[in-house]
Length: 406
Ligand SMILES: Nc1nc2c(c(=O)[nH]1)N[C@H]1C(S)=C(S)[C@@H](COP(=O)(O)OP(=O)(O)OC[C@H]3O[C@@H](n4cnc5c(N)ncnc54)[C@H](O)[C@@H]3O)O[C@H]1N2
Ligand code: MOO
Image (cartoon, rainbow, N blue to C red; front, side, top):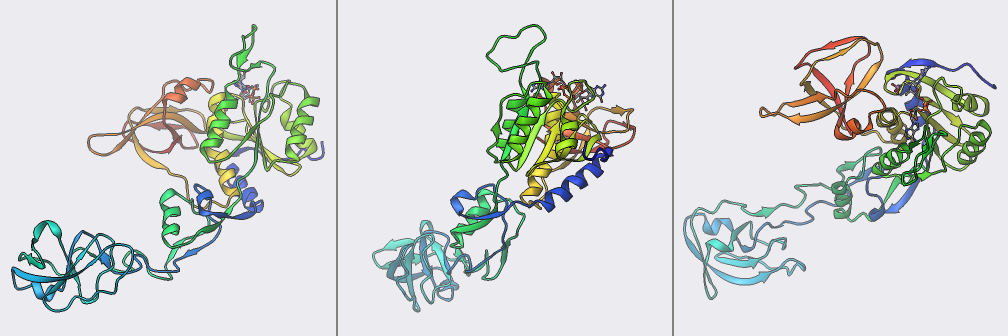
């Protein structure tokens, strides 16, 4: 082993801070893309408004553009002098006693400051009867009321949600600089694994972690590559992992990281790469391994399916976010416990739970009784991870806990 001294038995917070440091030091390059290709990416530039929104004063309704001074005194009849539809500004003018027919989104004619909706007027040829009680500036959308030129709209590290991409489109911006997505190689390990669809010999199980990890990564907008399952054979494991690590940004394995005779991955990483930490005081997921191999960041998740889930949802996702420079935090809620939790051990526990909003609008979370880290079905029926803090904890019904939505 080149270096067999590495941090071990870290607290969750220590592990997360190492993940953050390594991610920040290995930020992925940026690329400039057409906005249509930037959805859900992490922005790597400032977006400053090059123009106001709306760009010009315009009507919010279909109706008649008037001068409020003409209609303020009570019911009155105005003379129709033109039509302004949305599309091309005709440069119309509304003089004293006049009005212009207008549609939603059409530029306000000069002189007009108020729009009267068509449903309330009486039309008699060119004579438009306007009722009393019209408010000044009614139904007019003012230039710049949403965005002023020079406004800071978006900043590096933010997620490009549909509404944010649409806002840049409305500003006329057609390209954005975003972080590259990490390329991710996914491995499952173990002689006991058989793909779904194949019969099981005694002692074998179906590989579920592959779908779990691929699905989690895809849901985060990545396009991971699943590699063939690794046998419990150190020579084959080494050759496949080194192959993947030479061409992917991130290699994620699951299984073969705890204390068994066949748990070859930590030693391999220590010998051929570098271990940032091995074993975190968290439950599930304690044997988590993090390091690097060749050009790749390397995450060795424990093999138990719920451990894969919890370590990915907490630290794995954090690494991938950090590599992309994401600064916008992931959503997290606080909820009241609907059942007591008694945790005798000192590790931070991520329990599965079901979140509900009560009649009073308070979020309540029910911890799942099926706590074993092999109980994937229970995790599949839950929708949040309940964060039970470090140290022994006796939490009562009604106590407030952090919850991480799946
Ligand atoms: N003596 C000790 N034994 C164990 C320890 C320990 O510290 N000392 N840690 C336990 C904990 S906690 C966990 S978590 C597991 C993690 O073990 P590994 O990461 O080495 O994973 P495996 O042993 O390969 O598998 C664990 C478990 O998960 C099943 N598995 C693995 N891969 C898949 C897959 N792709 N699809 C479905 N199921 C999978 C595997 O069959 C095992 O049942 O170690 C404990 N032991
Ligand atoms: O940490 Mo293991 O992941 O508890 O089952």
